[in-house]
Picture (tube, rainbow, N blue to C red):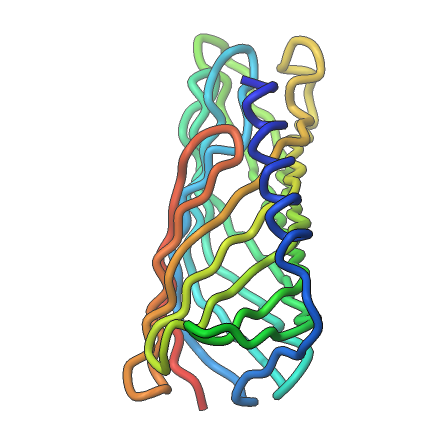
Length: 221
């Protein structure tokens, strides 16, 4: 499995490097308000899948050339067989930094860098088959290269490839070994569908430790 992740990561980087030409990227400047849902399979701990459901509200800002920045807040649910399912508040932030845009026959191709960070703090999580309850902090970061193809004024497709870091930090020593910290390949791909340029629906697949996905709906002002 680790060899497969390294192959996916390496292939994504090679694709990004192969497509790097001269040009510029651009967007319509503004800000948006919207909502989102994400399912992320981030890690395995003691041979058990560690999954997260993340949902809430998101605000985005972008200029005409360089930056598309977001900040979000909402709830997160953690699933791990060793623990009772638990939910808490969570927040995140991130940005895409557009480096260049290249014009091809089928449309513009934008290339840039993406990064994000998310945090959640769980209280009184019950460890199954014991009387123990513990507080757990969850950290997740992503660093990726990104390619976006502009198909037409209503449709974009994108591919991001890089690395993901995930960490669970419990107050008590409830995990054997050091499986609660992991760095994996991170691949995201999806489409952005615009309705009258203001309402944008994003459908996304992700692969960290396993396959996940998400949906975002943003209204731009």
